[in-house]
Image (cartoon, rainbow, N blue to C red; front, side, top):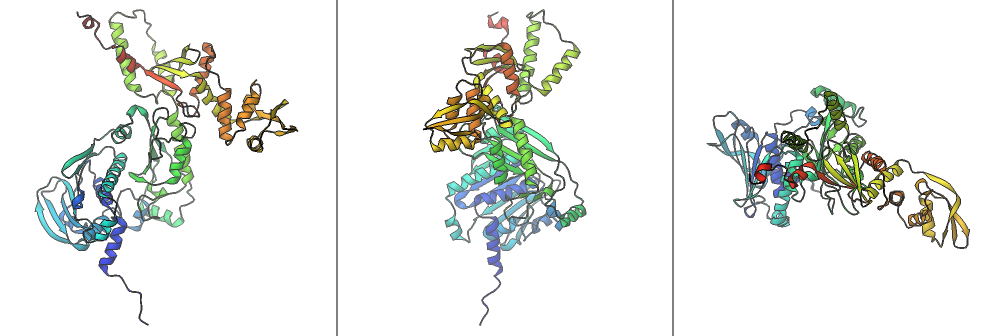
Length: 582
């Protein structure tokens, strides 16, 4: 019998390999802009002609020499790794040397490039399999321009199987926006059919860039946090061989970092979990475990069926990442995943707290406030204002650096607490603020206490009885259609409406739902008059909670009236003489 196993021809191998890397217009853009970023580009221009299946990416990166351009599109050629040990210290976006070579087997490829400091640039047209077919000198500014034409021209079936061009362009836009979030310092210009499509301006932070992408979100709706994180010790997933490779490569272990941008839950949230974004070392990645960690950290801070806005960027020492356990570069594995999950949860809790550093526009507000006070003093107002001593100033600065100083001023309609703080005024809704306090106390210390006499309930179904037993209450038959509840949550023990509260708990839900219900029923009711001391105590308890911005149902707890907004409304910048027509 003749053998049926044969080696594939080279052209078939190239097409199969190319299909793993280049499968649509968005993947072409992704690979080319990653090369631009690895080249140190700060300005990238992407031009697309979808009907012609043509893409061009121009950048102001370091460029390539003529010799490098001859090798750039050959199989597995790259400047980013040299030895096996380099696989354990990958810091670049590209490293496998497949993208340009794959493009030569699926399209026509042309590159113009000039290195920084070079006398002239070069234009190279590549033939099949990446060989330089035509080379000539070219006038070009330092940087690189890559043009891909007639994509999938030799695979008409591939084109027909792809989504519509409109869907592909939407994917291109998403690819550029995801990449821009990881590199906010870069200027992006995107053209479609020789018309400008959209532009992303460089930003000092991700919080400033995000509103350019998510237009309904304002910078004031976001909270940004940067933290240094020590690397996990004694990683159980690191083998002895990999330890030797890391030592041989001379890699120095450095602390990792975390950059977090969240939408404040009292200001913005989403109908779908479509804005949970995770990036690692400059690349957006897929990680269901980390996404679930983010969702868990926001639990009981958002309204029902709403999801957070969150962008998480981890900067992790390469030795703690394995990029090579999955062919897709977006699929990675983190050593000691539980360690990173714990740090992410702590970071989100820190970002959700209310203190002097988390008040939006705090620096601007402080400056405006100082200017206004100085102007008032010079104009003769408040002439008896006492000037604080240096010791008092130091004490005040120390306090403001650690916590926000809240002062209860008054109560409105026996419902809202008027709160003064260094940046302006708040109205705090007393019931839901107290509800947040009680809920977190219950989560930390859920106590079921015996009561005597028992609470007698009438006509409970078997489902209701099971529910009360499920949350830990001691309940037993007490006669025909009567039930005796002999233990209750501690907060309900002294309440007159204890029976109604237990009946409410019997209608379903897990322990956490029960805790929310108990907190809601036990909290101070709206319409209850409070003394200034009682209001101050509530404010201090509320400020110490982990998630002080919303109640467990997701309702906002306070309304902010910042000093800068008050100054604008009352037009305190006006010169009094001019306002009188003098």
